[in-house]
Length: 292
Image (cartoon, rainbow, N blue to C red):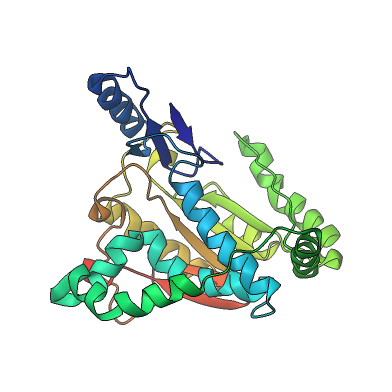
């Protein structure tokens, strides 16, 4: 059995679980097929409710709900605690690699010797909340107050004549949604000079440039983003666009080695570069320090 994650065209993880009579050759074949499709499959050694990723999510949700129910933190603060804290590290390396690297030369052994006992104390103090109607009402009310809802319009295969009209459409959407407190974010190819990037950015709140790979050169699946290709278009785009409202999106799926899909940015030192993610009005700059 293979368990992908939504949206499957963006999230690379696939959990593969074999049955009692599934051969090793069949499992290996399935893993290779998913790798060929650009996915990051993992093998789960035995079937259990929620598999792996959903169980990890459930463990975090349980404590998050407990913290809100006890009045320790709000829904918004819990989100910030993860998205602006350990979630940034986990998204790159996962929990074990992060712990191992944080231990320096001693690695995970040093971390567990130093922090293991207090961590066990935290485990014993974790909550076990009941998902009562009152707790559900609290969570929903705070989420609605933050107003997380939004709209996604996925427009494929835009013709050249339609691309020219696209900024006007975005401007109309923004005019209609801004009074409702909404923002309009637009995605566009990283390297297609036919797209009116400046006009799209002028009529939106943020512009996301898709730098996953070089497929925009042909319209078909292309090679992983190369260093020269990436730097060429990065310099060009940031010279014409407002970097405070520009996101450069890397693709990290299916390539395995980090060095493959994060190009070494040789000209990085001394200037702002790479990905600027606008969150809560503050641009964040990400780069791989050791890649220079």
